[in-house]
Amino acid sequence: MAVLLEREFPVEAGAFTTAGEASTTIKRTLKQLGVNAEVLRRVSVACYEVELNLVIHSLGGTLTLLVDPEKVTLISKDVGPGIPTKERLPFSREPGYEEDSVGLECTPSGINKHGGREHRSSSHR
Image (cartoon, rainbow, N blue to C red; front, side, top):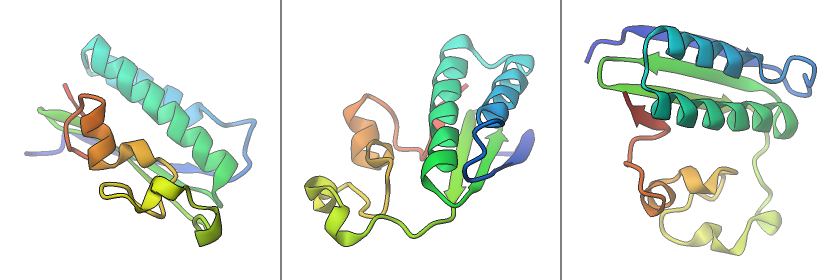
C-alpha cells in the first residue's frame, strides 16, 4: 500500500517544556486528513503517552507517523540503556512480552488481550 504521509518527529530527553508538541501536531494532521474519531482518539492518546515516555525515561528518540489508505501507524524509537535485568518485571519473561520493552502491553499478546489487532502500534482508518 502506498504511504500517503510520512513524518518524523524528534523527541528530546528531558524536554518537558516541549513535551506533547509532536502529539498535538500528529492529532491535528490526522484530523485534517479526515481520520475517523475513534482512531483519532486512540492514536492521539497512545502518541501522547509514548512521547512523554520518551521525554521522561529515555535519552531521546523519534516518533514516526505513517498514513496510508488502510491504516495509521505510529512508530516510536528511543535511545537508552534499556531496563537492567535485575529490575525487569517477573512476567517480562512470559511468552509474548519483550524483555527490553517498557510498553509491555504493546506486544502482540498485550494487543490481542485488549481486543486490538497484531499490527505494531497501528490502527485502521
